[in-house]
Length: 185
Length: 375
Image (tube, rainbow over the protein chains, first blue to last red):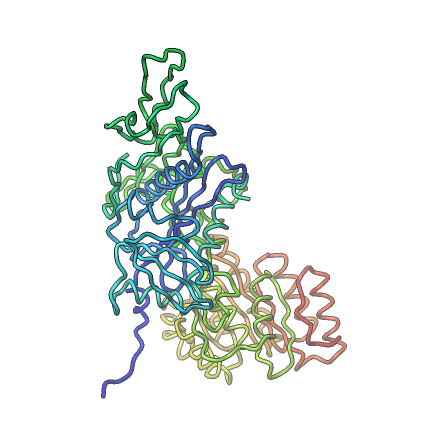
């Protein structure tokens, strides 16, 4: 029988999780966005942020402008972030399925999170999953759900078990408000 | 814009937004027929839609671009020297690991200095920030730490070996939220656990990088055991043995330096080979402070000199201390602004002295966590 042990570096091996936070500017002039990277212990590792201004024109549907703006600002965050996370988490109510299913192709899994009690549209190409955190959450994976036992899924489960599935989004919002005090409130 | 990241690609999609043409033309237009077949989506700086003639019903001009013109910032990476001429300081990427203890923002070094083959430039935020203002990177590093409530939760990032009582959680929060605190719980309520819990979170949040614990010699083993139990990830260097042994024990990298009064006094006064390696200290159980008075003053001088080098704050943990000496120390540490925690108990103090000590602490703007003293 092996001697039971606990490797302190085990959590470090799980890598980083990226939380993509999109926040409309207070004056509706555009969007603020942050890619907040934390490790499995919830420690902040990297905070990448940017803002985009959207034109006020009647020529464009607001949904189209929003999608276009979020795509553009997400691209800048991805291109800038110096570290590569294991997976990217975002809120389904902030990031529509088209962003990562059609507009941007990522080579790492993207998970959109939505409360299970709230109906949320999702693409047919996304894989729906469910996790029992403090409150049940629906997970929409693209391009596919990580396999059982994979590092990505263990990282997600570790974060969920530590109450860090949704909390980092709040921290990212705090960071955005600090960076853009006149637009983030 | 060049990129470092290779783990994403932007699709060349035709899903450009469709303009609302209704009402623009005098006659109905079938959108499908008039949508340009080759629409290129330019980069960030996009051309504005061209003028659409509505006077000539026979000739129809088409907009050159169907993408909305969005003003977007080209972000700066402080680490990879990626910037634009019209940089805005409030955008970019900030590495947050271990940033709180360092004086300079992450990635900020002398211009031209190379690290990992990348030429680093001073961060723009430091240039724009007034000299007295805390750099944005440091503010972010502090704000983005896990909140205390999450850290103290049983399902939080920290695995606590046992359940913390509500009053202990309250005490830890109070210890973390103030630079000076007189914790005066009754005997057996878990002051040690609260102190270790606060220490653990301070280390996790990178708010301190080392700690000095001075305890009675008879309690060194117990403190070591408690620290191993409640903060297993913290490395302890127990200062004991001969002077030669203590010299390398002081120099050993550790989170917590644990020693006794006698050893500490000896090292502060007699052992010239023991450098003041303490960057943050927590003094505990100064039961024999009268005899340590000279050594204590020397310690403070040493620590002050070292702290002036930018190494951190001083943690003070007082237990069983006589009033007059406590007042002197409080004054001393308060003036030096190096006090982090004051930890006292009413076990050795009578009721009157407790009131006096607590009232002094309040007067000296040190919060007294005396809710359980029932004063």
